[in-house]
Amino acid sequence: MNFALRPPSSGRSGPGGGRGATMENLEKQLLCPVCLEVFSKPVVILPCQHNLCRKCASDIFQAADPLWRSRGSSSTGSSGARFRCPSCRHEVVLDRHGVYGLQRNLLVENILDMFRQQESSRPVNIKPEQQQQKLLCEEHEEEKINIYCLSCETPTCSMCKVFGKHKDCDVAPLSSVYARQKADLSDSIATLVASNDHVQAAITQMEEMCRTVEENGRRRREQLAGRLDGLAAILDERKRELVGLIATERDGKLGRVRGLVGRYSDRLEAAVALVESAIRSNEETRAPLFIQSANVILEKIAVAARSSHAERPELHEDVSHFVIDTDDLADMLRNIRFPPGDGDEDPDECGEDSDL
Image (cartoon, rainbow, N blue to C red; front, side):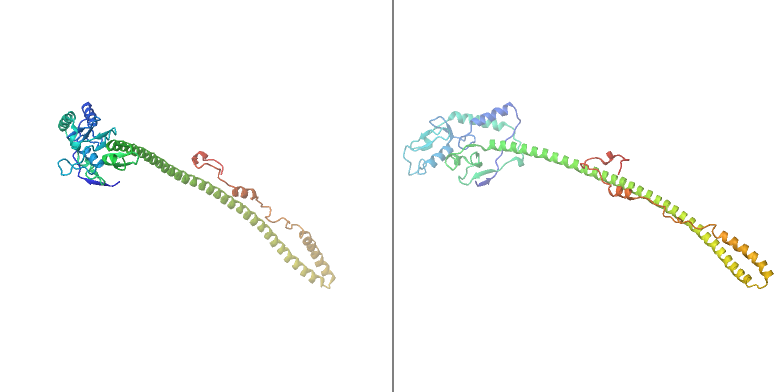
């Protein structure tokens, strides 16, 4: 449905209490069933005892009988024009005077005067931003949008309810629907704000969890890296120690073998010299001199032959006995695994002395 804006009208506000509630109840009793606003004078009473603003009654009558002309015109409608009461649907038959022939309800008009006097005496304190612009119906000019069609779920005017496309629909005062939906929206906003607070609390908690996980991960990484560095330091120390032992024994064995080589070299030179001396002695033709030198040479040869077998290198003069079995250790290192967890366990719960 299309709407049009018109300048806002002044509202009224005042202190709450019993007097305010009484005036509100009185105002509800003084609402026209067509325009749903306080009756405007003059007020006419229908044969069924229901009241209408004269303007609203005229609008209904003209809508029911478009050929009718106002009183005093050159062409008056015939008597017997009729329309139905918007409150009880009772058929109202008018005479040739139309709605001007209906009796005025002076009692209601007097009550309206007293009501307006009471309302004018109430303090007015309306803020400019609290004033609302009135909407006009585009299908019925000068008719305010003052009711809400519950069936079509759209605001409309009283004439649309009486003669328009909403005449068979259920309607309610726009103010009551406005108040109800405003309350529903306020409740929804409160619910959404509470939900947002809950989400914000969850985000804060998860951010704190992120910081905790990051700190625990850093601390555990440093701990494990330190332990592995410690193992590497132990291995490096043991490597230096074992390599030193091998080098020491190697140097000892090399010194021993080289000493034997030196002694055997000296013996070989002495034996060569003894052979040369024996050859020269063997060439001696003079028997006394030969015998004298031969005895000495034979004694030296016998001594040299005995000492040539005194010390020889042993067959195991090597370092092959230095053996270390690292297969089990290598398998253990390769099979290092982290224990399964749910991701929320504090790494500190594993203990500082837990096995890798």
